[in-house]
Length: 125
Image (cartoon, rainbow, N blue to C red; front, side, top):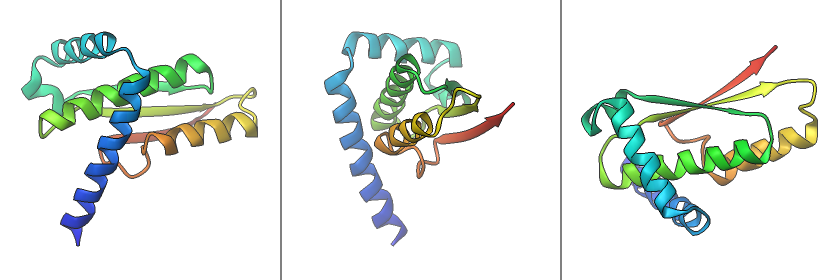
């Protein structure tokens, strides 16, 4: 059953990557992947690398998260290990229930909740 679940999730992640590649510039994605590899010290050390993105509900944060998720899924499709994506959601006074719903929808759309390569953090104050 576990193997079946992993295969199903792999298919879902491929679909997410396909959707992201339709919206993302491939050259920018390849440059990001190269920079991540260099920063980690090579492809073999990428599995120990963590990349943090802060979500505040804005368009720029959503684009950054989508680009990092595309890089993560792209690497995972070619190599068994990839970096850990750490997503911090800042709870600030301007984080209205509507903005929080938008952030949750973005996380749902990118399938962040069930992926062991993603750490979701909620930051208060």
